[in-house]
Image (tube, rainbow, N blue to C red):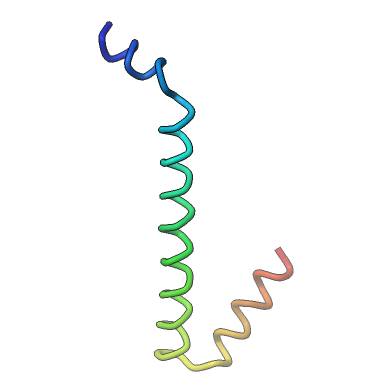
Length: 56
């Protein structure tokens, strides 16, 4: 019962923190992944990936 009361007392701030952390983490992953792709496989594969993302 105590867990439920603590969760329902402040659901909005915790959700905001979770979402901000989630988006920040994915943004870092995407930028880092893009750099790794450019270094490993060259710019041609990177361009293909970006074109595929544009079509989606």
